[in-house]
Amino acid sequence: PTLWRDVPFSAIYWYTLEKTRIHLEEIFPSSSPLTASIRDLIGGASAGMLAATVTTPFDVVKTRRQVYSAVEFETPDHSAAAGNGSTPRVLREILREEGIQGAFR
Image 1 (spheres, rainbow, N blue to C red):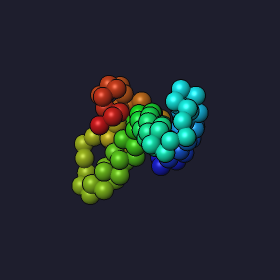
Image 2 (cartoon, one colour; image 1 turned 30 degrees about the vertical axis):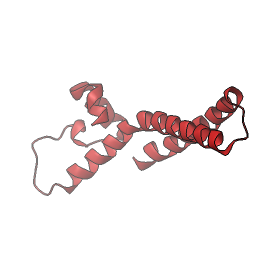
Image 3 (tube, one colour; image 1 turned 135 degrees about the vertical axis):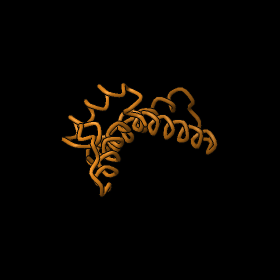
């Protein structure tokens, strides 16, 4: 589950950061350190928001698995949404049972 989150996050983040930097340099050309810092801030924030939005559902799956595996008593809920099953199966069950909001809790 960690790879489902970390690898796509890094790929999306770095790709978006570089493309945003290039685009902002075309829009705001300047050799001023302040302008470069603002471009980097906007690029980093944009890349981070996009990457986090795409990968948060996989983090939710990972967290549910951790929480439910740490519970030492028997629970009546053995559904995929409770963290049982493969990552795609758990994610499908979360979406089916809780809607899109459940993937971002």
